[in-house]
Image: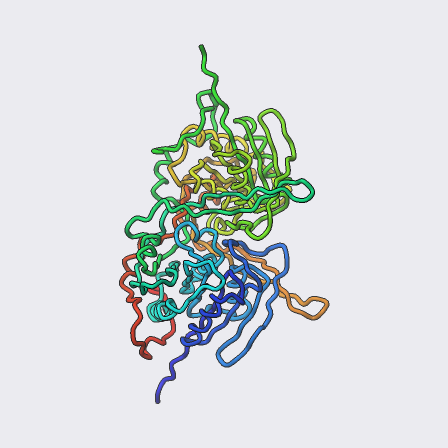
Length: 276
Length: 276
């Protein structure tokens, strides 16, 4: 008697919304690998980070059902989609969670703001092997052709080997160019920041308002960073965890004497950054 | 000639909204320490994490102006408030950023969802010494009396000593009880998770909808965690950083062969969690 190999079950989401070209490409790739369930936002929800919807009700809408395939839109955030996907739609964990393909890089500090990557972290909290894919091209007409076989291969490897508990992957793919992708590099999150340049305007009633228009400032493109890998036309894979503890600082901060006591004027001095 | 000691400049925000008792208490404490500028959400924005507002304009409204004090409400998220506070209101960094006092614990995994703590992390990205305060009591009528002198002392210490670059503090305070606060412990973020129990309902039109109603499941109250400290009636101080890199996993993941190649059936197996 021959054992039938069970197809893996793959949950797909994103933050650009269910109709974005990026998720349509990702769905197509995943359908070559297993059974696919999509639960994705019904509209763009970029820069929503790990937010969840607690003050209004959530809705799921069945969009398509076919052999080995179901697709739902949801009025919530990417993290809401993961919660509803696992707790309501699947009533259990999938074998793999993938998010993306994001229209725009989630390398460096961008990972903090990204709904695409928050969905991945949410998966890893629930011990689901989870991978986020982002293309370094914000255009809605971005081309994903050069990325497809790489994405397929990374998903396959994670399905086969799994990931350590609580670890997920942040995969950033260079924009298509004349030079082919050079390969895949496993690296660390580069330091970096956004330089906010608010666009300050005045409305027809004479009131000020502001648009956030940040410019990414890469402070760090050292060897071994996601930024450097992409500059060299490599796909950057950063293994991620979700413990914010600054373990190295516990001893130093432990030496602060936080207990209440009599206060003297010497303590009213402006702040300094230690070693800064 | 005697030098006049310049008062420190303190930026205050939260995620429960500008009228929450927690932020009113925090403002009162901070006004005893320096010049205070408040930029806080005009309504509750809990569980907004690190989200920013990119698809609608932001507004600032001056609520109060007095000697050494200015207060603005903002229609954005807590992170928007920090960005507007530093880039538009102050046009520079304050000496200290404080966020809270949150109505509810931000210990363990809660830190990922919290707008209060995202504002703190945003401050630390900009190299501002930043501290978030949360009380382990979700009630809008929570009592903060037992926390006040501790909060004042922690803020003073950070003003005097600063914090290492990129490090911020997550301070969680036990709910008031008959036993006095035992002291302050510097510790690590406990592992934990929310067990989502969606409340599934049917609307008058016969359509399903869902409310998120999570129950926090503390998997980890080991010695040295924020959860354990609070269980023992200590204030928990976790030094935080914002690098998601799972440094320990880089070597292991580096041994995955991610390069595209011919695929065989053996690779279509369900996922396993390594060491799981």
